Length: 223
Image: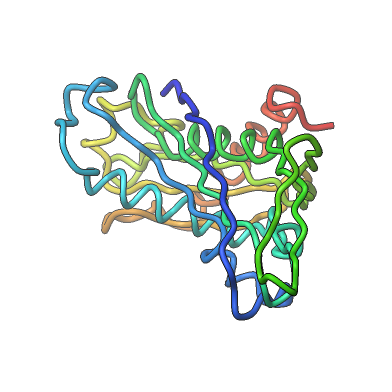
């Protein structure tokens, strides 16, 4: 898959409460969306978002929350009054399978390059004013920067790394391993009702995922 990122649209909204101690609240303030238009593959038709796009968007949201790469404090303008809501849109321009891994890398890259207008909250008017000239980068928790490495399990025994669009319909199940920069496990998820191949297969996937994570570290610009 070759991901193409649309311009991230950013706006603030008044909030009743912003509690950085509860990272699960991040779903309110970071809204990832993966678009799979008809132009990227014959399998997708024009119209509303496909079920696959919605499922992948939900999975991307879960990973961003689990990794806590974007602390809620970095989105706060005035505690309990106003905060940024980030809409992170990724558009696939050439679908060849495993859109999840590519979209996650693209979205994290977008967050790393995002700068927000400096905003101040006026308690008298209850309004937030944004500067046209001063921009501040997002304060990201980069030690938890997530990268996804997915594997397909075929016939309960054969492991396919980074499955293609041709291979995906043939798989019993898909295993996605999310690792941080220090190869720490952020999450592991299984999609499909087939067998994941047992403990040995899981450990083999984890070993290969760590190798892939090391190889991607320089490519995605991590120090």
